[in-house]
Every structure is written in structure tokens, then in C-alpha cells.
Image (cartoon, rainbow, N blue to C red; front, side):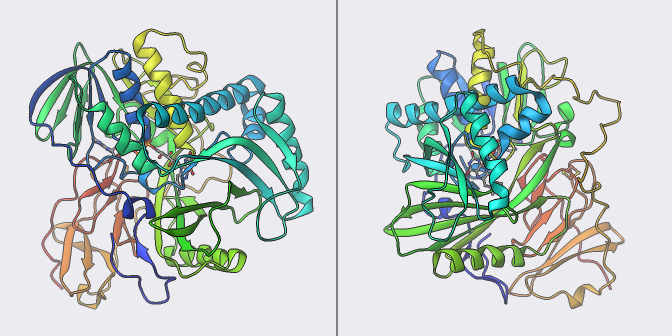
Length: 510
Ligand SMILES: Cc1cc2nc3c(=O)[nH]c(=O)nc-3n(C[C@H](O)[C@H](O)[C@H](O)COP(=O)(O)OP(=O)(O)OC[C@H]3O[C@@H](n4cnc5c(N)ncnc54)[C@H](O)[C@@H]3O)c2cc1C
Ligand code: FES
């Protein structure tokens, strides 16, 4: 995904700054049959945190990662390690009550400290540093909600204050401030964890996509190259692969965009998110001698069709006008699973599961939510009581049961996406860098023309549950509007829940 920017675009390399500066791991793929105590499917922050915790407690583990460690959502994050999640406490108290808001806060605070502890104990060089984190307002009329959030969070025992003193280079009315938060290069953190997991009877396998899971004694996980037999299995693939548990329907995929642009000033000792819309999430960092400002935002449900180039351009304008940032160096987007009731799902994969577990619904705050979720599961698997487990229980009320209708969408949620309409344009008219879905004799066909003029054609039918994919021009990917699966222009799965590639199709006749 590193093609040149289309005309009129803010520019920069279409790649996460974190991926561009981390190098890569090279663990082998799984071949043959392996027996371990715990199989962990997914090498993101949730899966690897669980794997390390379980290994530390004496269990043998095998991590199965479809691509390379950390290159999923975690490698495309902003990098804030914090329990201040914009206005989460006000929202959680209103929806679930004070005890749930408190448990959420304590679990996320514990996650910040767990990450700090892992970095230190394992000697992981990932730029982890303590910073304050702010939710800020530019308009005085927004201050009451900030004061309320600060007061509530403080009463829940969190390190919260309200302040009018905010270290931003433009006028700000006030903010909620959380002390002793952090930021890090999350990809380097995960690569460091993976190196600690592998060895002494535990394993990390890359380029090993799980294609099936059969709960039982043992749990059996199938991959293209082999099978893992495990006492317990954890599905930590962001949105669970396949359709077990129906979490793909319960967690709406939500996309956001980030641009990284150089700035003259050294990194700030703080990270920020705006309370007003359009929401802007801000982090500064220094990598390879260059200070960067990361500006994130422009989020929308993945079911919405948008013009991504303008999203990047809006972020670039903000970085330039507010911080005097230079031309965009890197730009990227990613999507995360938003749970319908605002709480992650952690626990049994299905209501009947005994040995298959899931982590999902990390609501765009997964560096801490994913860490907390992993520690909950490690406790569950070890038979250790965990006081947060019941709040995040994947079997909580509202979970759909196979064969029943889903709950009504949240108010204001866009209607489920209709299948993308096939175009009537002759495929010859397709311009380099563009894609379209064509109704052809072989069925709906996703057609993409590369910069050299070569046509790439694959099935347009998502291999998860059969929706029609649409072309994402900014990133040159085929994206499914239903549950968020993404594919390369040659049909390879980038992001699940799909596990199978889009099969090749002949070029449509005109
Ligand atoms: C734009 C944006 C900015 C964000 N910024 C922040 C932030 O600053 N702070 C914060 O706390 N959170 C942030 N988040 C959220 C956070 O990054 C995510 O919640 C978190 O990284 C998700 O971790 P994960 O382990 O669930 O998923 P992933 O990191 O995606 O890991 C899942 C892994 O599973 C693998 N996989 C998928 N299917 C299979 C299969 N069938 N077999 C084997 N492997 C498979 C994938 O390749 C992937 O590597 C942000 C989210 C977005 C969208
Ligand atoms: S992601 Fe579910 S149908 Fe495509």
C-alpha cells in the first residue's frame, strides 16, 4: 500500500509511520501439527499481551499471526497509552452506571501500568515515555462537559483534573488532564513482546492464517500449513475471524485517518484529543532524528462511502494551520471494532464455548483496552479471580444468539450498507489507479487498473458473508461495507473477519 498519492492529495507516503520505522519480524509459518496449552490467534496488542502473560504463568503458548506481528490495527494506531478516552466516563456512567465506569477506568489504568512494567522488565526499546493526556475544548461553551468528566473521573479514583493551562500552540479554553499517562511506538512494543514469547516451548508463527476453530478437548485450530491442538484458544483477531459468536455484527467497524508531518519543535510531554467536532487526536514523537506531529480524526463507520483523499487533506490542513507542520510525510487509515454498548467483549467465544475465548470491541482505545482484556483472559484461563471480568463479559445481556434477530441499531447509526452498485462503465474506461465493480458473466467482478495500465480482476463478493466490496481509492484496496473486511487489489485478505481471499476472475468482456 505504498503507491504514489493521487493528484490533488496532500501527499506523503501511504504507509503508517510506525511500519515505516520499525523493521519487521521474521518468525516462521506453522507446518504440521503442534500441541500447546494455549493457542492465541492474532499477533496484535490483545493477542501478544495475553500470550506473554500466559507464558509468564507457566503455560506453553503458540501465537498464530496471519501476516507479520503488529501490522494490523496496532501498527496503524496513534500510540497513546492512556485511560482518558475523550469523554468515556460520562458516557459509560450514563449508559451502565457508576460501577461500570469505575471498573473501566481502573482496568485501563492497570493496563497503562502493565505496559510500563513489561517495557521495563523485558527491556523493550519502544520509545515508551510518560506524558500527560488531555481532552481539550477550544470553545467556552464546551467547558461544562469537561468539568463534569474531570470531576467524575477524579471521584472514580483516576488521575484527573480540570485545567485551563493546556500546552498547545493555539488558544484553548480548558481541558481534562490525566497525569502519568504514556505514549509509545506500539509496533516496536509488540515486536519486543513477540521475541519474549517465542522459545522455551512457546511459539510465534507468522504468515499463518487461522481458517477454522473447533471448540473441544482439545480445541483444534486449522491453518493452511498445519493444525494446533490446544487446551484453550484465544481469538484476538480484532474482529473475530469467521462468524462464530456473531461479533462481526455486534461490533461496527469504524475507520479513522492519520497524517504524520514534520514539525520544528521537539515532542511535547503530552498527547491530546479535542472534545469538539471534527475530532482531532494529536501526538508528537521523534523518530530517526525527525520530530513528527500525528494528527488523527475524520472517523466514520466503515459502512459509509467517503472520499478518503479529502479526509487526509483536512487533517493536513489542521496540522499546518495549528502547528505550522511541514508537508505530510506519511498518511494512513485503519479501522477498529466499536461495541454497541461501549464496552469491550472479553470471555467465551460463544455462549456454549468452554475452551475458546475472544477479545474484541476495543473501541479505538485498544492499547489499554486490549491490554486489560488480555490480562482478564489470562486470569480466567489460570483460574484466578478477576474483578473486571464480569463488566467486559462477552456473554453479557444483549449478545445475539444464533438464529435470533439483532438488536435495533443505535440511534444515529447509519443503516447497514447496501451492496455497492455495479457500474455500467466499460472496463476500458477505467483509469490507472482506479477500480470499479462490474456485473460480468462470471459474476460481480472487482476490476482495478494499476499505474502501468494492467487490469487486476477478482470476485467482488466478500468471502465473509457475501456483501459486495467497494473500491477505496485513497488506499487502493477493496473494502467490504458490511463488517469491515479489507482486501488488496489482488484479492488477498488485509483485515478480517474474512479469512479467504477474493478468488481471481477473468477480465469482463465488453
Ligand atoms: C486511527 C486509529 C487510531 C488509534 N489510536 C489509538 C491510541 O492512540 N491509543 C489506543 O489505546 N488505541 C488506539 N486505537 C485503537 C487500537 O489501535 C486498537 O484497538 C488495537 O490496536 C487493536 O488491537 P488488536 O490486537 O485487537 O488488533 P490488531 O492489532 O489488528 O491485531 C489482530 C491481528 O490478528 C491478525 N489476524 C486477523 N485474522 C487472523 C486469522 N484468521 N488468523 C491469524 N491472524 C489473524 C491480524 O493480521 C492482526 O495482526 C486507534 C484505532 C484507530 C482506528
Ligand atoms: S465483512 Fe462481512 S460480508 Fe464482508
